[in-house]
Amino acid sequence: MKVSKGKGTLVKKDTKEALKPAEDRRIGKRKAAIKADKSSKQKAKKGKLVKDPNKPKRPPSAFFVFLEEFRKTFKKENPTVKAVSAVGKAGGEKWKSLSEAEKAPYEAKAAKRKSEYEKVMNAYNKKQESMADDADEESDRSKSEINDEDDESVQDEEEDEEDEDDD
DNA sequence: GGCATGATTGTTGGA
DNA sequence: TCCAACAATCATGCC
Image (cartoon, rainbow, N blue to C red; front, side, top):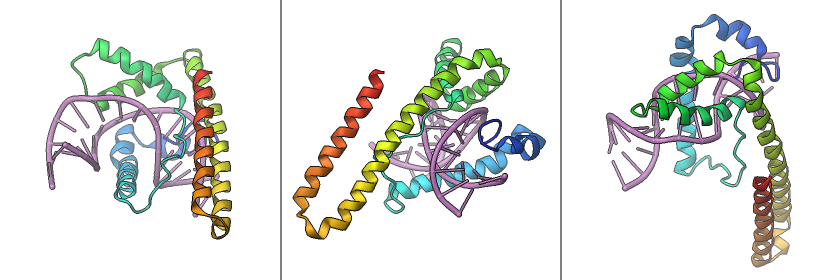
């Protein structure tokens, strides 16, 4: 969740969440958050509250990087277990049992993904700004001109992403 | 058929 | 500083 290191959220682990059993967190606050999350996604999908589909996806945390590998292992060891909840639980427990040294490579990968995300976000933000500028100038411009520029900027961004992938 | 749900931790972004 | 949202995964159930 939003606990442990990073930013100032460490406090929470020591207070709220640490005081509550994992079960409580799951069926309580977290669940509510998930429901809110899902409903917001739903809203987004339904049309209102539309989110930018071009917005870069958030980078996976170290835990999620670990989970990607863990899923493969878990599937091999438990080919009959398909439930994502089981993988999540097992992954969570395994993650906690890992030493700092064992987590290190996953954190390194996560850090790399994060820096890539920051680059992409930068480009995305610039694009947003330029689009806002475009909107201001829209009355002066023909729509075809705008579309041309937009296409170019999108292409640039896609190329950037591919470059990052190569890296 | 298509979408929501569940279960996990870490990080981000907004208030 | 705190909290909600979101990131991946996919079988299952519901409408």
